[in-house]
Image (cartoon, rainbow, N blue to C red; front, top):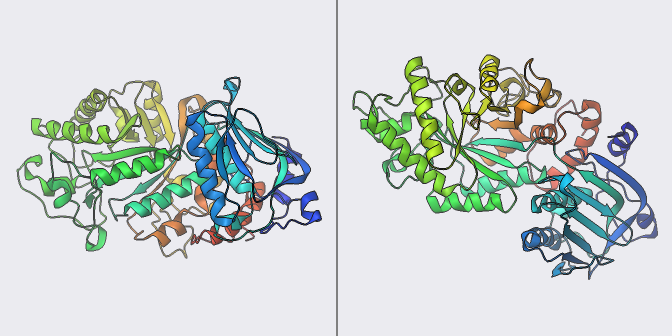
Length: 513
């Protein structure tokens, strides 16, 4: 993007409320956009939304849901009643959402947004691009659009033209629901955070030593017993298959793919406690409520183990329309290396037999990966290079840069420190394609920011650890890299939006809030 345009976007004032005055029609303060769009042309003046404004879509039913989403976003803050109407022509004075077969250069998620004084036209090649563009419209509106009953007069959008496409196809965050359990509504709120910043993957860590969180009908004691506690000895919990499908659908409606993780062969104490036959000695260990890692392992020499895994993967795959199943594979210190490699090779085949591809933490790169499997780099660069040599793609999640459960600094009450501190500038100021020698953009599927929950127990704590870091990871995934000084000037406007959305965020001293 042109440097002067970037600077203009960063320094333009933030306006909370727009009135229908002559002055506001001439000059509308531009809201700071995250992720930064590719190409922006800004003009003077504004498009005024009024009572009677409508949302027209071009008849393609794929984007009807996005039109409804925009209507549901705008209506609570106004009394305008933004009606959704099918139309083959572009209408002045209204929103227009359109798919174009001629816009293949925009890819699956790119979009073009043209706001003039007369109309708003959002065009994309695929329906996901329409939805991503709606998030840009949302961010161009004042933060108070997130509240109910704010406007009964004109609401303004700046006159602007944007063309925008993401750099990486995988832009995600992880939520660990095993160490501490978070219910359906809490997961949906987490999805809402991803939605605002155009992220498209939610990795759910569903099983670990401390809890098994998804119903497996063929092995019911996994949740009845293994899901009954959590770190610190709380009551835990789990998702029924119907609840999990509800989460998947909620995400899908926002063009977010759920990546379910069943960690194995280590991080399995909850399963071992539920079914003693999965242990080599046939004895069930006690349920575990601490935070130690690396002490558990499925019995890799038992055929029953693979029957168990096949059942679990089969049921989870049937509930999950996305292309991937994550098998974990990290910190399997209680499994001999030869056994570990044999295990991963076999489980990779089980995953593929159910129509999915395997994702594993970077340790799994030591196995005989297929080129369609994916390695998630979190700790070991050598393993990442092994994955690339086998044709596998990487998800970039280096712990020292992306782990949102790490403390901001020494004064942070929540979080861990084993990989250092991650202040907001440290989390943002790196380029996934230049993180390590031997890895370039072609090797990278995308970026993911995990939130492990050893110390995180409720939604307020999730919000505090996630904001303001998550938007930066979203921008790295969309743009590939960024300029910290410009980015830090955009963050305060989002802080205002987070306040309106009742998000409990960390007010980093690196940012002039």
